[in-house]
Length: 116
Image (cartoon, rainbow, N blue to C red; front, side, top):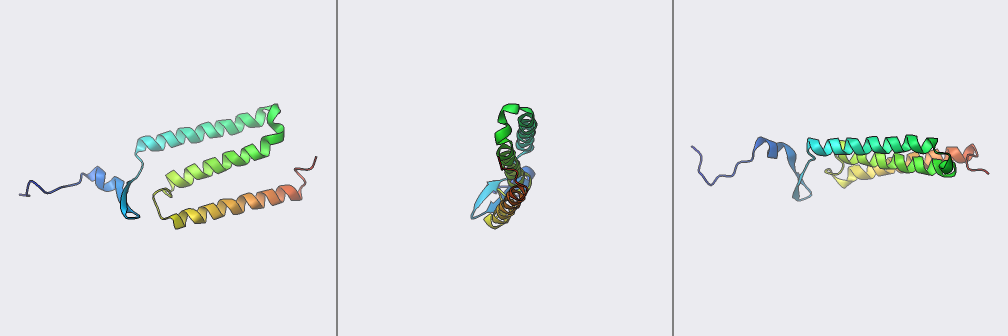
């Protein structure tokens, strides 16, 4: 029999809390994942809607870039758990998205997409 003053963590607490930079951080619950999925669906719907709005044709590419970065950030931070891991991993992903955006802008400039 165990002493009454022994603290025991439930299975849920053990699975959802991990040591993180000297403190305990919790991982998102399934409800939070659903919220992020809904936000991603809304951002995707906004991307599609912006494409069909003729009034924003001049700002289409920057808007789509913005939506892509938002979606990348949400997926990397929440679904890939970068929000809870070492900042070194986050730096690799930021470097990757910066490289991808730079390459894409270079290709757009090469094909004179921004020329009037």
